[in-house]
Length: 530
Image 1 (cartoon, rainbow, N blue to C red):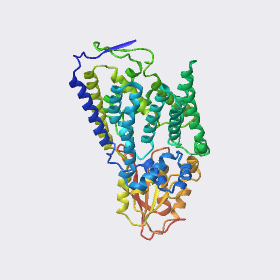
Image 2 (cartoon, rainbow, N blue to C red):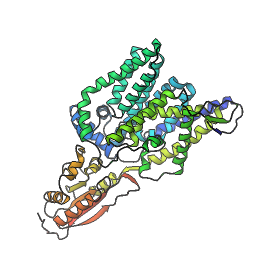
Image 3 (tube, rainbow, N blue to C red):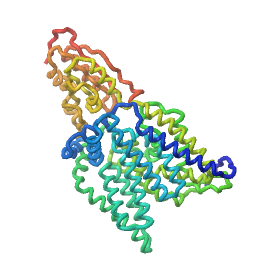
Image 4 (cartoon, rainbow, N blue to C red):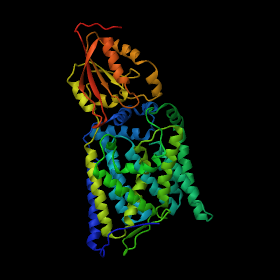
């Protein structure tokens, strides 16, 4: 048993009760603002999503074979763009709207599981949590995953409390939608199935509840069968060869990713994010292990067992992630923080439960105010972080020679770059030497090693009109090492060109940095060496 002490408090007043309401309302309003606020251009994954979703609906499944994702989000984004266009704000606003709807669903989900006050606190936490606001401004499926998982958890509670065939059908439909939105939903579905098996009891009501939940899970898997062949093809042939498989330490740190944004990967963490993370972990521990505080006590007592109120949420959240990380480790597949979106909502509700266990209104208000302040500071920090350097490179290309040949190395820079660059230029992506508007991830590592860099340089040089300038957009990250730098060196040698750097990559300021180099003839009449 672990015990620590919080400051004592006088009798709770009606004023404190309303202060909590005002704080929740403030968090919702400011959180909604940050769900539509970012100064960054679309980076690789976002631009790729838009390019796939722009295609006719019947072509989307084929394009996703190249990409490695299920189709639900792309179909929804396709329909959204028909209504609102494809500007940066328009395509990102779908995630923002979905994330705002999630706040409403979170209230009803948390209320169903843990009551009114925990539901209010849950809304405040989800409203300002940097993980939520970041993915609300990203043209990816993660905001949709969080909405669907919140709805699934709400329906699961209804199923556990009052099992019926309507709730079974609703749960099956939501789980099916999750499977068609992100593949890590497989682990969430599996955890829900395990929870149903754990709850099987001899009484007739317990049996009915468990078997109806199991029926919903089975139905969702049956409806996923039509996509199974595509999924298996993607599993075998698409992926990111530079990403290391999930490791054992991920089992102990994954929940910390909810306290920050993807900006932490390229900007050093700051005091506000560390302060928020401290509160986050403490409240998570209280929500899972602590007994509710006595109204007269100032002690928080942590027991070495999961508190009964939190058990179903903990089982689903930690069960999903443990299963996902374990499978990823042994299958050699990567893990990144955004995959944890499947459990972001139940984890947030557990944190809210931890806050509610402080019992007294003033204690809850003060701790929530500190947590919200650090979160909003991190939200503001994240809204100003830049995800790609494509805007700078595109601006430089716009001032260059029109109709020039632009070599993009690797082609992963292409989707974002081509979104903002002059359409009159000709773009060639390394390694496949095709247009890099949509990255083809099929057997990507094999494509990288199919031919030597020197051979590739000669093939590119053959496409350059005599004496014409060549632009090279390159990056030195992923597993490429000096591949793109060597390509530039070989191009200079083959063409007898010299190089000048127009834009230098900023590894500390952008998630997707880029170099732009201009290659020019050393002598105006220089001929190419074939």
